Image 1 (cartoon, rainbow, N blue to C red):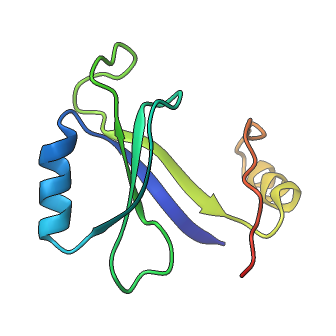
Image 2 (image 1 turned 60 degrees about the vertical axis):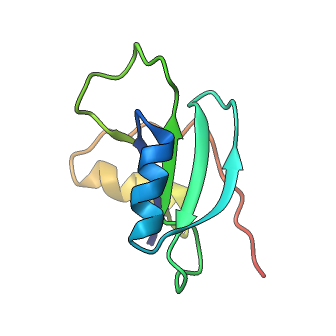
Length: 105
C-alpha cells in the first residue's frame, strides 16, 4: 500500500500555486472542469508521482469553510483483500465508485 496523493480545496488557485511553487513543488498537469473542479497536480522534483492535487471551484456550496481536504488516494494491491481486512477491524467500508487502473512503466 502507498499513498498516491491527496486533494486540497483551494479558494485562490493563483495564491496557492505561488505558495507551493515557492516551497519547491512543480506543476505537472491540470484537468479543467471536472466534477470536483479545476484540478492542478503538483509534485516535488525528486518525487516519482503527483503528491498534491489542488482542487479549485470558485463557487462551493457543498464544502464548509475550513474543510480543505477534497480527497485522499492510496494504492492497494487488492481492493477485495483491503475491504475484507477493514471489515474484520470493525469498519464498514463502501466499495469505491471509481477505480483507477494500475499502470506500469
